[in-house]
Amino acid sequence: MKKNLTAILLAVCTASAHGQTTIAVYGLVDVGLTHESGGMAGGVTKLTSGVDAGSRLGIKGQEALGGGLAALFLLENGFQADTGALGQGGLLFGRQAWVGLQGRYGTVTAGRQYTPQYLSVVLADPFASGGAGDTKNLMAPTGNAASRMDNTLKYVSPTVAGWHAELAYGAGEGSDGSAAGRQAGAALDYGAGPLRIRIGHHNRDNDTASAKGMGRAANTVVAAVYDFGFAKAYCAYGINKGTNSSLLRNNANPYGLAVVPVPSRDSRDLLLGTSVPIGAHTLMASYIHKDDRSVPDRDASQFALGYRYALSKRSLLYASAAHIANRHGAGYTVGSAIEGGSGNRAIDLGIQHAF
Image (cartoon, rainbow, N blue to C red; front, side, top):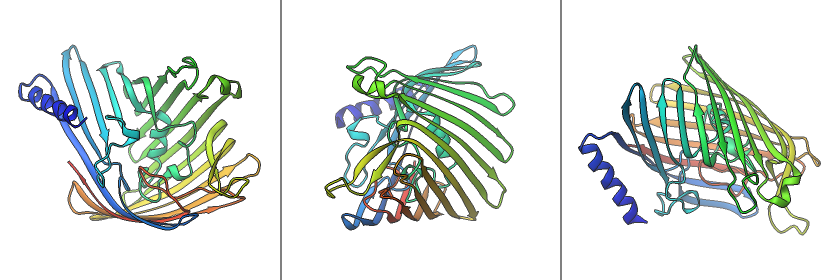
């Protein structure tokens, strides 16, 4: 695996040297110290990777084909900087892997890509889907609405008067047929001046033929950001419907032994947040509420605070803390950009460098 990655990087450097295309190698390394508490394991302290943002190594390129048409690709590997292990379950390019064409009528790409709905949630998160305040602790994607889609064709329209649209389709391609695990998503995005609004939707059929009769999971979110100059305000409202549209967590199974995932068919998410830049310093805060409309009404609320200090344009120090108040047996945990947590409270301290 290491030899394969080395060969790819050497090939990239060779292509760039001959000027065949525009190619860039980039990455990010994030390592932090995390203390989690309030779970069945008690207090847990660990040095881990991908706390504020997932550690990654990427290669991207573009070639002009003439007539305003260009070929482009992106390969992005996720890894654990604390151990050197591959991320995303051991996939070589688990974060993203796609190739496509871009022209005057938009961009079409094929491969492993982010869902339009997930990109909508990230837009409204002052923590940018990382740190202890990560939206993934409570909001979709959990359960059926994953952040990435495999086997995906995606179209992004040109921007007209501040508006652009996205469409994505991913075939299931499993042993139970292409309908099992099939995914589709869409987004409508508007940005002009200090305002950005995005509506994202994700739909996924259940993963097996035996579960197809149970219907499908659908997640819709409306996200907005307004930049006042001295601060940014964030807001999002999500609607989750269908089996596994949001994976609730119960503190204990009937035998009281372990945390058990409980599928929900109907829930709502609300996020309110802010970020305040002060020179090299940035303060963040957010509130997220999960309104479970299934029986037995396992609601939860998360309160989070964060701080980033820019050492330079590429390096920063960060700290974040969050607490989740679970109700009626819910067992949501505070995680980070890459890992789920072990308890309903966490505090993080770390360093990040981008290149």
